[in-house]
Image 1: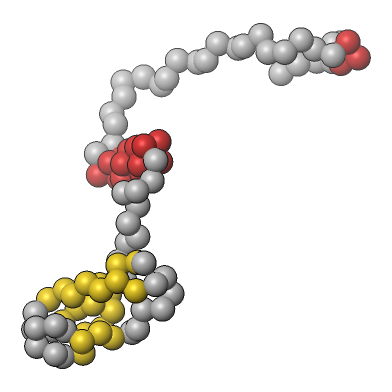
Image 2: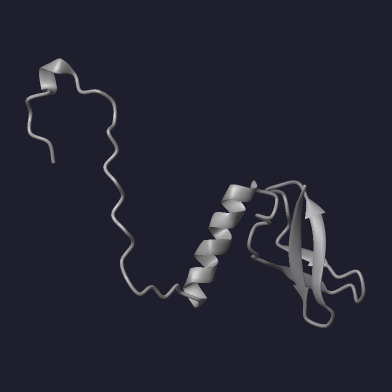
Amino acid sequence: MALYVYRCGADGPVEERHPIGSAPATARCPTCGEQSPRVITAPMLGLADRGRMGLIDRTTATAHEPRVVSAPPPRPLRPGGPPLHPATRGLPRP
Protein backbone atom coordinates (compact mmCIF):
# COMPACT_ATOMS: atom_id res chain seq x y z
CA MET A 1 0.00 0.00 0.00
CA ALA A 2 1.26 3.44 -0.92
CA LEU A 3 0.36 6.77 0.64
CA TYR A 4 -1.18 9.25 -1.81
CA VAL A 5 -1.74 12.94 -1.08
CA TYR A 6 -4.70 14.96 -2.35
CA ARG A 7 -5.15 18.73 -1.97
CA CYS A 8 -8.53 20.04 -0.80
CA GLY A 9 -9.05 23.72 -1.63
CA ALA A 10 -10.72 24.39 1.73
CA ASP A 11 -9.08 21.98 4.18
CA GLY A 12 -5.58 21.38 2.80
CA PRO A 13 -3.84 18.05 2.26
CA VAL A 14 -5.72 14.76 2.50
CA GLU A 15 -3.80 11.46 2.70
CA GLU A 16 -5.15 8.10 1.55
CA ARG A 17 -3.62 4.64 1.14
CA HIS A 18 -4.18 2.68 -2.07
CA PRO A 19 -2.38 -0.22 -3.77
CA ILE A 20 0.44 1.04 -5.98
CA GLY A 21 -0.83 2.21 -9.35
CA SER A 22 -4.51 2.11 -8.44
CA ALA A 23 -4.98 5.56 -6.83
CA PRO A 24 -7.80 7.63 -8.34
CA ALA A 25 -7.11 11.10 -9.79
CA THR A 26 -9.42 12.71 -7.22
CA ALA A 27 -10.57 11.83 -3.71
CA ARG A 28 -13.37 13.09 -1.52
CA CYS A 29 -12.27 15.30 1.40
CA PRO A 30 -13.40 13.70 4.68
CA THR A 31 -14.17 17.12 6.23
CA CYS A 32 -16.13 19.02 3.55
CA GLY A 33 -16.85 16.28 0.99
CA GLU A 34 -15.34 18.24 -1.93
CA GLN A 35 -13.44 16.38 -4.67
CA SER A 36 -9.68 16.99 -4.23
CA PRO A 37 -7.08 16.50 -7.00
CA ARG A 38 -4.07 14.27 -6.43
CA VAL A 39 -0.70 15.92 -5.71
CA ILE A 40 2.53 14.41 -7.03
CA THR A 41 4.97 14.05 -4.12
CA ALA A 42 8.44 12.61 -3.62
CA PRO A 43 8.59 8.88 -2.82
CA MET A 44 9.23 7.81 0.75
CA LEU A 45 12.93 7.00 0.60
CA GLY A 46 13.44 6.89 4.35
CA LEU A 47 13.16 3.10 4.42
CA ALA A 48 16.32 2.54 2.35
CA ASP A 49 19.53 1.22 3.87
CA ARG A 50 21.93 3.59 5.68
CA GLY A 51 24.44 3.76 2.83
CA ARG A 52 21.87 4.93 0.30
CA MET A 53 20.28 7.38 2.75
CA GLY A 54 23.71 8.84 3.56
CA LEU A 55 24.45 9.30 -0.14
CA ILE A 56 21.11 11.03 -0.69
CA ASP A 57 21.70 13.32 2.31
CA ARG A 58 25.23 14.25 1.21
CA THR A 59 24.10 14.92 -2.36
CA THR A 60 21.24 17.11 -1.17
CA ALA A 61 23.53 19.02 1.21
CA THR A 62 26.04 19.86 -1.53
CA ALA A 63 23.34 21.64 -3.52
CA HIS A 64 22.99 24.27 -0.77
CA GLU A 65 26.17 23.95 1.29
CA PRO A 66 29.11 23.13 -0.99
CA ARG A 67 32.35 22.10 0.71
CA VAL A 68 35.11 24.66 0.44
CA VAL A 69 38.59 23.19 0.09
CA SER A 70 41.97 24.91 0.13
CA ALA A 71 43.80 22.34 -2.00
CA PRO A 72 43.00 19.41 -4.28
CA PRO A 73 42.77 16.02 -2.60
CA PRO A 74 46.03 14.08 -2.31
CA ARG A 75 46.86 11.68 -5.09
CA PRO A 76 46.11 8.11 -4.15
CA LEU A 77 49.07 5.78 -3.91
CA ARG A 78 49.35 3.37 -6.80
CA PRO A 79 48.43 -0.01 -5.47
CA GLY A 80 50.66 -2.90 -6.37
CA GLY A 81 47.69 -4.72 -7.80
CA PRO A 82 47.64 -8.36 -8.80
CA PRO A 83 50.76 -9.89 -10.29
CA LEU A 84 51.05 -9.33 -14.04
CA HIS A 85 50.59 -12.19 -16.43
CA PRO A 86 53.98 -13.21 -17.87
CA ALA A 87 52.79 -12.63 -21.44
CA THR A 88 51.85 -8.98 -20.73
CA ARG A 89 54.71 -8.11 -18.38
CA GLY A 90 56.74 -6.37 -21.10
CA LEU A 91 53.93 -4.08 -22.29
CA PRO A 92 54.13 -0.37 -21.37
CA ARG A 93 52.06 0.73 -18.41
CA PRO A 94 50.37 4.13 -17.90
